[in-house]
Image 1 (cartoon, rainbow, N blue to C red):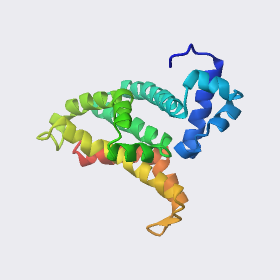
Image 2 (image 1 turned 180 degrees about the horizontal axis):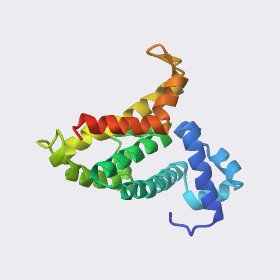
Image 3 (image 1 turned 45 degrees about the horizontal axis):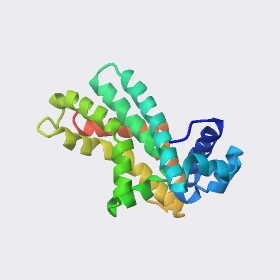
Image 4 (image 1 turned 90 degrees about the vertical axis):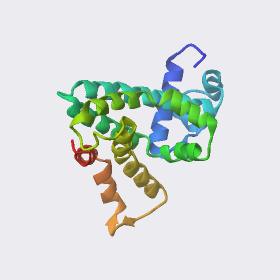
Length: 209
């Protein structure tokens, strides 16, 4: 952000995070963000310039909060496996937080949107380095010891991300049931802290850890 920080821009960022969590990108209205932040549109444009730049700033802020919690969780682990589990749980929690915006980001990446790719690479990848280091520590004791660290990441991380994202997509598209079970009940199972922790354990056991 090129402008000096103030209470106004911080309130706008807070409002933007609330809107993204609740309504996704389509619900990220500049007018509503200003209303919630008690700021006028002139101040919005002074600090952020455009809705696209505001979205990037909000996502960067959310990732910064995630990364701080991620590092704390990893540091609390007593051994590499516990640290890796904490890291996976943190990733699952972040996926839950951005489930209403992640499908649009993924769609942009699939369609080859270079701006989206550069933003993700520059702002959303630091945690992968930590997970890679932990996976490397755990690999000699795992069932994947003959595989590369990127292979391990590919086996572990998607388990934490895609069930949450797919669940969010189904919710937003008005799907009522899946497998004969109400979406609300499934969401409570998949999105809960317990459900995320269970998936992290399943992923680790699947890797023989």
